[in-house]
Image (cartoon, rainbow, N blue to C red; front, side, top):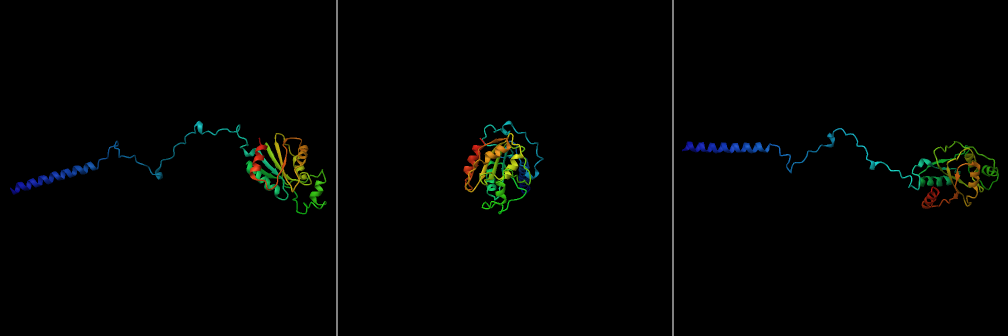
Length: 233
């Protein structure tokens, strides 16, 4: 009886052992790829394969040409703000116009800079006074400025004794403005632009000259922007 009991216990133990091995074997089998709980393996960015060839842009991604509908030129290279400034006021105004118009900017620099004494309006013997009293005066320019590639030029200067400084005569006489629209603007203590823009236009004999305008330094950006837009229509 004891022997039979021992055999029975051994048999039960063997059955339990076989069941345990079967369970362990099932746990090691991979789960079905169709299982809802199975997720696709993700790849770390550090091990990403070499980038594939970039896709070509579709037609909808191509830049569109808005030239026909744009009121202001989008290519800044066609617009130049050109100025002469002896005290800095016209330079400040020109910089604002260039920023608002998204235009290039260049300054007409005299070969011999003007000093404070040269600009003493109360002394008729000063350099500026002598030049303005001499219609043939042509002060030299330090470095020439090319107008190639520009279709619009904003031309700025101070008003001296009712006219543009004679260095403007030097510049306009030495350049061909054919195919260019010139938009004069000026600064002054009180004088308007007067006939200074017409006088410059007569010296060139080329280009399309628009009516110039004087601006006070207190003019707002909104007013300047409105003028720029009207000028470029």
